[in-house]
Image 1 (tube, rainbow, N blue to C red):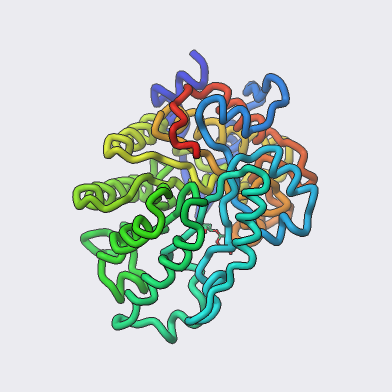
Image 2 (cartoon, helix red, strand yellow):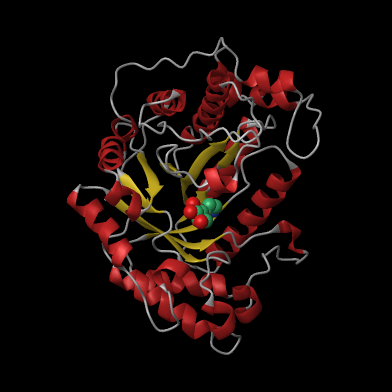
Length: 388
Ligand code: XIL
């Protein structure tokens, strides 16, 4: 039986059956080493780019990045164009970048990114319209229960109308669920919830749909990937939210799985993940993997072993999600280890550079690139009506 068949049957989850967690992050060394098994074959046929391997299966491959990286680093831009079909705005459309004062918007970076996308035939994806994080400093001083709706309307209309007809998809609401919030609806306690109540979510989707009827509107969240109690709670709550939205005819079109994975996490269960994806698809929703990366924070220092473990996590995950026909895009959160948020947000204690992405800091393809390429090569073909 191949590893792929085992994963499909959910046997992959057995790897985690005897896990004895050690402290906050780690697992017994032998278990982590086992994840990087030498017998695993990461061979890839040919050297076609990820974009082409994905496209022949009707899937979009792309990555998030920032205008400043593309502008300052032509070699990075060249490799981005070689591998990607879609560009995701990592930070250039976040509230704190695009809405620097209560009355002003600054579209310089986002416009330049869109221009780069259009000039080079890439799809453009907006991240994001409503999030509790990355709010500008003025937000807390200015926004309150009386005026929050006005600010929300103005922000969404200004951004979505500006790029209407040119955006493949928008992350309309980001990370609105937190099962630990103590609320019966499991919504995260955010300023938006505090000021507007639970209806802020549907308000945001309705505003976005009015401003750009062509864009695919996405609900995006993290921690839905593993066989862990927190992921199970998140999956259940997210499904509940999506069901509520659909039953009220709110224009939500897709679920975004951030998929910030952990190289040292052994509790992966293919069956649980694929059942969840099927339930989402049964609501008539598409699915996008929106922010894929694998943190190597607590992995061994040995680079070859570390790369094998990271690549294994990519391949196991993608084999499962690409088996679900509703999955239309795989987007990594960055393309090269030269530019990854994890250098800052999840650094290693030994200070070695982190290696979470398909290309290394010199833009050479790593084992992770092979893992993604193989997953595309093995994926079933879906209809590509979502490609615009
Ligand atoms: C991160 C960016 O990569 C950082 O540059 C920024 O400082 C903080 O946000 N989930 C999300 C993304 O939805 O917006 C986050 O991106 C990563 C976690």
